[in-house]
Length: 146
Image 1: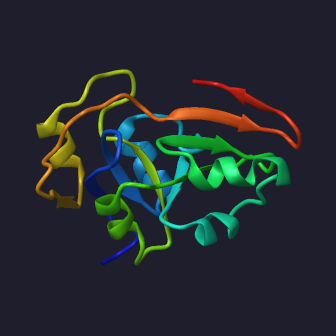
Image 2: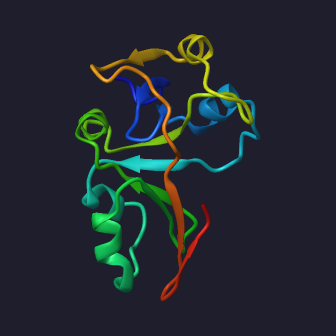
């Protein structure tokens, strides 16, 4: 498995493109190449390699489900809880993740499959669900963004 390929995967919330090549993901979505993307990780250990979790939020980050955290260092990280998605991520350690639709538009299976280098479909198939919560963490304060 090549980390630079764009994978079409059913995440725990919605259908998404995953890759370690952020510029490629942004080009597919039709957005600014420098726009940040969230990173998905399978374990807390992988998460700690990218950002330091403030002491007051360690337990929350560890047990949160379907939640993306914006850390003080500017990283947007999400620890995946769904077993199927976590199993896909584990060999890579981390991957940039974004929804599998053009910016500002809805999900279209034909578009998503045409843009992906590799389609990974499991028994669940592809479905849309509400996006993850977005929480900005400070040293002692947390703010819900979405």
